[in-house]
Length: 199
Image (cartoon, rainbow, N blue to C red):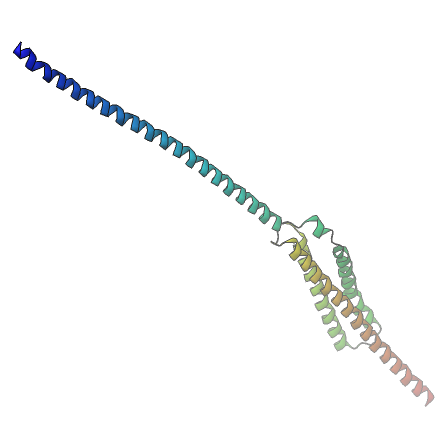
């Protein structure tokens, strides 16, 4: 009996120790479950934040791409700008004048060969400038050739328009001066002929 009494507290002590360890393990398990639950919640928040950030970045990229693509295209408003057809018409007038006027002036016979070469070189320079401006206009109005805003494209068309107006005015005045010089020479020859006839 004494043995039984002495052995009973040891068994109770062993069971109570195991119960305490079990209780401690259950507390640790519940803490781990709570930590895991918090981690899942944090992961969800982090994942949603990442997805939102990714969507914003993607939208910003698409917006920038759309803007960049728009810079490479000439809008219909630029293409239908009223100065464009007028500019092309003036370019044709300058090209025709540069092709026809030198031959017409030389055909009068009142332009010596040295001056004819000079006239020809002036008209060729003006025609080359007109062709260069036509190439610039084509570049400005053609998609995927140059990166410009519509305002920059319109400013370029305005500049080309002013330059071709100046060229047209120059050709008209230059031709008028050369024709006047030819008429003056013809009148001078006519006057000299009349004087010879008088004498």
